[in-house]
Length: 93
Image 1 (tube, rainbow, N blue to C red):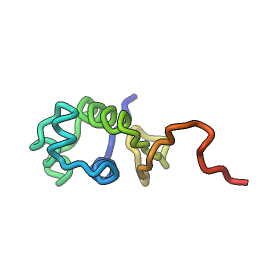
Image 2: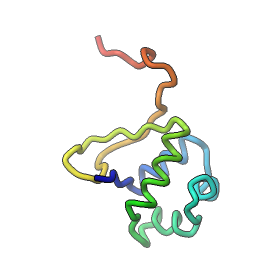
Image 3: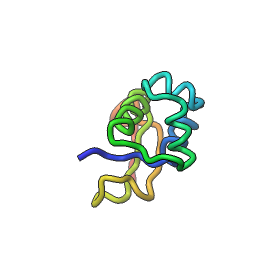
């Protein structure tokens, strides 16, 4: 089952990296027009395009935080930097 990104998550991932739509589009092989249409809510994102965007963002240390594990859509979620080194994560004592 594919995990579908939301427009908010894609925008947040781009913001974390400081990327424009054009930069993410170029790196993912998705057109800037398609990315813009999705982020503006004009067209739905397909699972294939969502996967392309997710892979590129995750390869650049963006980590998606899911709240709703019952669905294929990440709902009420966010993004953060993925730690480069395991063991340096924040620990709750």
